[in-house]
Length: 118
Image 1 (tube, rainbow, N blue to C red):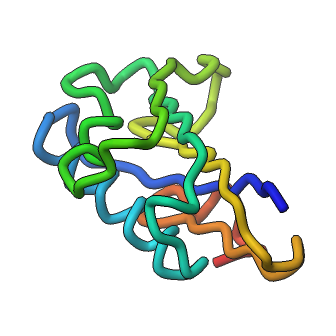
Image 2: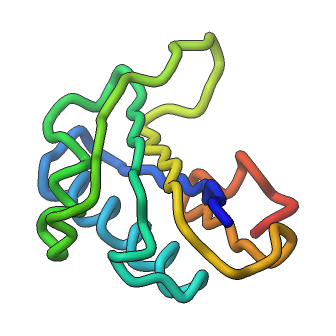
């Protein structure tokens, strides 16, 4: 089956190293919690809020060795009052798991987005 796994995290500063480190932490956590290898991952969509432009978060996937996965970065819709300095991920994967067993991951300040999952 093909499933989408959601994840999000936040950073404190619009800093390339921090964006890449926190994105890498999120990707590794999403893969670990769902028992994924790169070959299981079809594609990953990254979004960032408008206050983050110091780095493409997709570079974090390349930095951990995911070189054959399709990646795309986009801006998140700028909704008034929404969470700032947020990186969101939608990872499309092949998995034998049931949908109810997929683990979505929310780290740092992004835990407020889905308190039911954290």
